[in-house]
Length: 276
Image 1 (tube, one colour):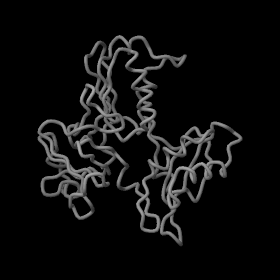
Image 2: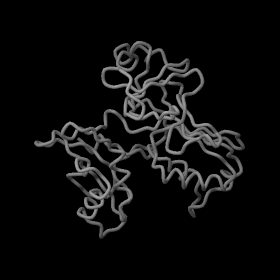
Image 3: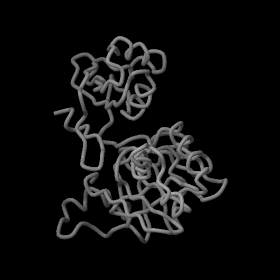
Image 4: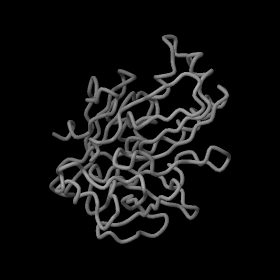
């Protein structure tokens, strides 16, 4: 179902609200779109934008804070949200005021119900990870002439998004990762996003992707693919960095350097190509 997510950025001059559909896994797509050749925000982006809604996966909170500060200086506000084509396309959004919470996808949209469930479709407790499912007037009835595919994602009137999240006591949801990308290490769930966030903070790392690979002892093990920013960076330095910040079973067992990582035409890293 991930292939049905939006990959469109639509920018109108002097709009009051700019909606960025999910174009890449990283919020940097907005930064790239608003930078000139010298790396400075383009004047027309400053002039035209008032609010920015950014649906998509959970982003790095530190990067989100820095981006929020930059955009605030440009006299605008931004709010993270979440949606998919099957939901026309918004399910949640952050309030455009002080109630918005960086690092979350906000609260359910009007007339929208959001639940987080386990593999049996039962609600998980607040603060625990579960699959995001949704009901609302914007949710599709099904895929055209594809009842088999529809039955996989619409169950008892609920849209199963395939995205894993956590809901806090105030109802704000934080994206964890795609369910299909989860790595099972010795019976423990490991989410690639968490590994990638830690590796990305290691000095000398430009890009990183984490995947699960078969392992005789643990069933699966974490493997990372890294693009160097510093040519002197070593695998040992990365692994040691991970040991300082991750629980033992989450520490990558394998590390491979690449000149570049496979991406879609909008910059999303293709983990599945790294697993093949």
